[in-house]
Image (cartoon, rainbow, N blue to C red):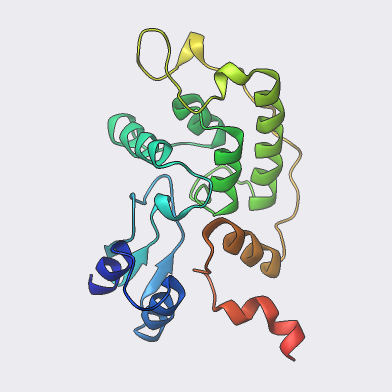
Length: 193
């Protein structure tokens, strides 16, 4: 709990990486942000620390709040389409969520590579229909868009192999600005040897 509290309050003298490295030395499991299990900021979960949605670069605080509120009111998200239909993120926010691994908990047999391709199709759909992907997700009645107000389904791209481990770490670093899944030197392992 101490490490989660320090990280939640933006540490002190040291960077986020330094506190995460210390957490690893303390044998804490570090978990990526998650739309189904995470919170706004760093949270303690028994012997682990869960990174919060607000750590994802490119995800507005208002969207993180909407994701959590919608989850509390209507349960876990089933897949990418379900997430989009319920909270209507901007295309860049959807990409950031996928890039950070925040959608990896979906039981949809998709790889992160599949999800990245899906988010690109979503971005294309948004560029054709900007009113449905404005990040506000409200109808004239004031509630979240559902059913009749929802944008049509984004087609699921053909399945592809998962990214290589190094690419997964690069995506994580791009989305968060630090690594959760491995030590930062793992990105440079080939060059170091």
